[in-house]
Length: 209
Image (cartoon, rainbow, N blue to C red):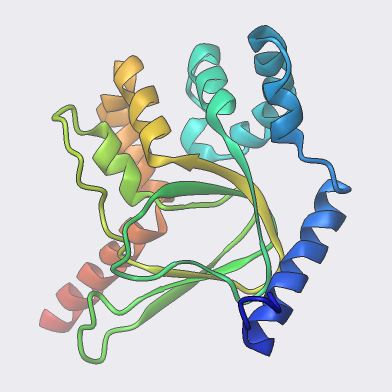
């Protein structure tokens, strides 16, 4: 940081993240350790670490064991510190984040629409980056990553697991049951994005009366 002449504010942010990572992991890089083990052991350990956490997410509670195993195998640990932006409105959505610990603010201006602002708080058991699911559920091949409709910012230290876009697309392609109407409807029910649009439509309809 000294060599690159980072400003003091950035230095503090880096140190803060490094301290939190040390506290959360005990200084152990679990992903590197796992890569040195046979694939069967890697899968068993990932299942032990992630399965119950994945099951807390309402979106996944009806999936079979093979689907859950495939998701667990591809999840990556994710940490962020207070005030960190996970994604900004309009930026590409590169991953879904499943929150284990901590809270975030999620808000939108509906693409900069004048006078429009909607926000909500998300925490343990919630997820963000659901725009990727619509992209992954589309059986037509597409290389264009969707843009975020919301800005998501950590308001405390946050721990979770991330599923990157390419891995989500792979899981969806292997398990066609993901394309069922039941799962789509469940996504909409638990998605903060869909709840926002539903609330806006209700407000508009009410004002027209």
